[in-house]
Image 1 (cartoon, one colour):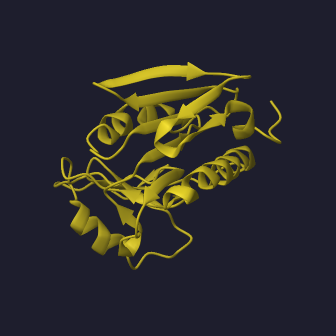
Image 2 (image 1 turned 90 degrees about the vertical axis):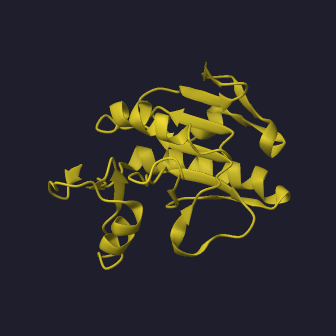
Length: 186
């Protein structure tokens, strides 16, 4: 993960969008605490897990007028210096232009060793500020383990492992943990 350089003032989402727009398409940046951060290329295992999740979640989402998408940035009115790119976003209705959404239903973050602290810390706190978000899945790469964060009266978390299925009432179905790890060797 590379930082775009230190600035005296934090960059707002509007400034970040102007800054990132002319960057080459092969560069993937996210805005974290007002700093643009270049995202490292994902591993083959990471990509396999993301592909598995996209396939399953899109199948559940489509009948409800929703879709599962990679590469969408999340915005929150509560934090104007943060625009992360989770691995999978389930979004309902029409897509706003530009690849930024402020009303995701479900988000998936696939952990890697370099992002684990941020994904389970600061990003988790950011996602909690997004009113439409019902479920956040934090998916481990090195073992069949998924943290299921759900907005109930507050946020609750449980861990799902091999042989379990994660109920997704917002999509009218479930995600078997094994399907997330299909064709992944540990």
